[in-house]
Image (cartoon, rainbow, N blue to C red; front, side, top):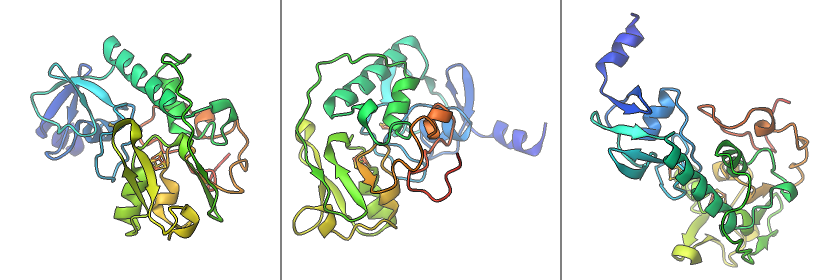
Amino acid sequence: MNDAQNAANERPAFTLDGGRIPFTPGQTIMDAALAAGVYIPHLCHKPGSAPHGSCRVCVVRANGLELSACTTPAQPDLVVESEADDIRALRLAVVQMLFIEGNHICPACEVSGACALQAVAYHCGMLTPRFPQRFPRRAVDASHPDFVLDHNRCILCELCVRASRDDDGKRVFAISGRGIASRLIVDSPTGLLGDSSFSKDDAAARVCPVGAILPRRQVFRIPIGKRYYDRSPIGHVGDVAPRLDAEDVEL
Ligand code: SF4
Ligand code: FES
């Protein structure tokens, strides 16, 4: 047994789908699982970003309770199920709800193949809608020279809110309202992105897991069918689809 294995054996551990997951006190179930190379589906979680717990895609059962893995602290006595049939069914229902809450029309979307929502839906085996489509009428903000903000595709994950606040020190984005009335708002005199301090160099410009913060003039640089999740379905630890405007995307 090498030093790394010895160190892992000395750490506390919990059970996840029958396997042992070592953790460092302070880690969440999600942190520890990803660090151990075990994928738990997620959308609003991003390593290094403050836990948020809004999308509920990471639902697991921990000691009999359905909880979000990204906000639940790891503990030594936990028995966690992520891949039980009923948890997978619950996760699929959550994803199906996310699809009808906005307007996610994958065949007509510029980020098809590079969208984490679409990729997680495939991962969960979503083949059909399940709930009545709401078709909300939401604005498309095309005021910025480098980005379009399409509120129809926003899943309210707050990754842009956290990145703008914590990484860019700007607070360009926030969520307003509650429940079904929740919406992303922009801090500018007009409420439009083009009148805000948002810049293409911001961390917040690269975190949107869907096509809501859309880089102009770049999105078809990589053809549909050859994009990140077209080539490798989501499910690998550390999966972060490169933005379609990234310089270093490999085809
Ligand atoms: Fe999340 Fe994108 Fe909506 Fe921001 S714009 S809250 S990153 S889905
Ligand atoms: Fe855990 Fe979104 S990834 S609630």
